[in-house]
Length: 394
Image (cartoon, rainbow, N blue to C red; front, side):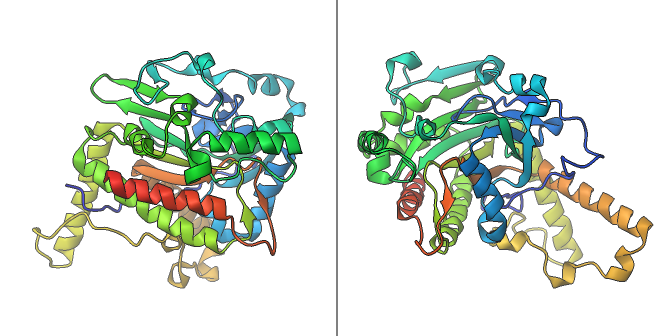
């Protein structure tokens, strides 16, 4: 039974290199392999550590303005900057590749009963046509952290958040259309709608995918089944309990953070990720337990003490305190500085090697900072309902 672990990740992991530096590797764009929702054209670069995706002006502005909101940055992918795709037409053309061509062995489910149905036979999911109010431009792309990097068999769930599915630029016709869509799904009542799920089946050795029509057909009474598709009851019970508790801790911290922000998060999603590779999971937990045992022995504690312990759920706990700051006289030595950078790189690589899960807010094409207007109540409704669902299926 997993009671808790230091193998947790709920604050951003930073890639070890600046993608715009002269020392960075060539971009070598590849279509994002594991994508369960959103638009085509998302690419991975720099060995998979980074994502490049076409973006709207609103999304660009949101990322750039978020620099002034460090508390929020902890719960979103790290932003590196913008790319001008017009400078490389071949890259721009690659951005338009349909990523569905790059999926491997996979079973797709389209309904709550898990019966495969052609996607064309379903109405679009709420929020699927949000971009109708704002054209995406392939000339500009945002460069951000790839949250799936480091996972062997990432299991993913995209949950569209909020009771409102349109932004302030929507026409009256579009506004009425999106209100109707919200009322036809769990978005209007619960502030959440599952946009897509992809889980790795250890028995069949293949991915099982639930498309957006699966989430669109869920109701207030069946929404728990959707979350159980992402965290099935037949998976390792200890690991499942661990993930449910860890996700809940992150959601509580996220809720407190959003309450303090003047922001509108229309059209955003929560991206849940966990490791679906049982061998990698067991290796990480075994190494973590060995490390704990060594620490207990060094401290004179009994080896019978628990070796897997819960952590403070606060993302801020991952930030360095004053005792971790480097003395300037030491850092001024080039050789020492280079050695320290190498150590930092090794530490980040080690942390990536121990990643078991992640949870962030993504998709900011219709989000905006709203000074003086208070918090996004519709988003908070969704957060609270996700927490309630995780508690019910625990």
